[in-house]
Image (cartoon, rainbow, N blue to C red; front, side):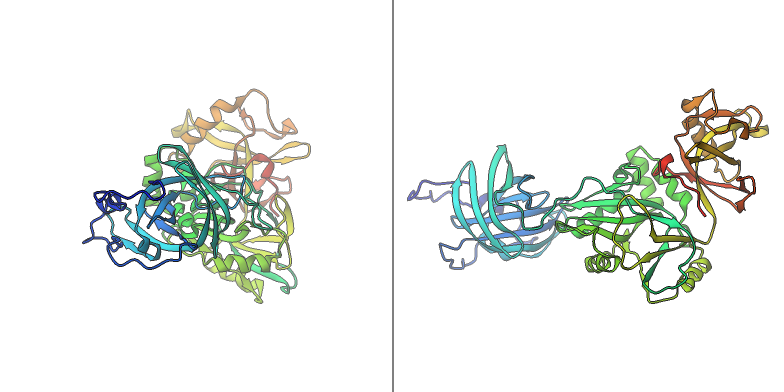
Length: 490
């Protein structure tokens, strides 16, 4: 960004667009080269443009008209609305004035290859323009107010909003505790209820800002590195900051969610393994709620009101979709349809209910076609025969006010590597005393006990009169949940 002394003449050899043109091939890119006639502009109304640029990394190009060119910065997170949050602004080469109206696709392999779309434009007033500080007042359709740009090191600048945040604006929260459904049966009267499919996956709250996504599980585990395919959701929403609630699923060969495949995705640590499995077992994010949008919290709104905002987002992509919401229909018909297609069940949601953050509410009722139960692992028994030296069965419990209540053991449903992987987790947690109350409930020979930290899930046929799981089958670990989350499913 060159600044000349007022009245100084520009050397004939100097070209303000020399760097710009040196990086582009006019025969290959549709971008303007700045060699056409310039439109006449009123000197008191210089223009600005913000272009959303889906290049190798999504960013926003912020351009201000100055001395016959568009002085430009790349903003990785867009223009800040909150004066408490400065955003990086990388100073780039000056662009021709007619670039301000450019939209199009720069071919792959060319400089800046990707899609360019105008996100906002308007005019601005200059309050200060120096090599080390640019202060302007923007008047656009999306962005208005006083901003200042200042360098930090090299090409890196920062952009700061000087005015207060727009009225009613609230920044994205760092964390949101998901609202939980109560196990039960379908409402006796369908009036005032909506019905959604219950997906057999992992709950995830997504925080999207500046085209980037961050996903947290119910126990605040960062799921983002495990599911790189969901980056496209951040790019899809672009500059619209929001918090979404949904379920991560991996489909099996029959098109039905396969929790076993999903479980293997959850425990990968190596980046190459993650990349390989995301191609072999791609995940989908089914979004069923929006809790914060465009700087405004939505949790106090009713289900129907939040649903309007969610559907307006039009979430539909290769790895994400908006969950169906069935209203003014019979819940029994939706439940039967899920049973026939092999799905887990339905969630009934009161249409006039707010989002009860972090609470288990009767405004949401989950009704299952199969009986599953989350359990806390309290120990294991030794294997026999071909399993000698390994695990035979897991000892399971349910947390109660008095302690961990023993509900039985599970020795079936494990994959080839599951037993070895579980033992790698259990041995470091071993203890000499039982975690179960009362201790006499565990009658297995030679049990090994562990600190009750790991949560798993089993499928079973029924509860016995003694409070034991009948015919349990192991489904997998639930690393997204903590022991405090485990309750008895009705």
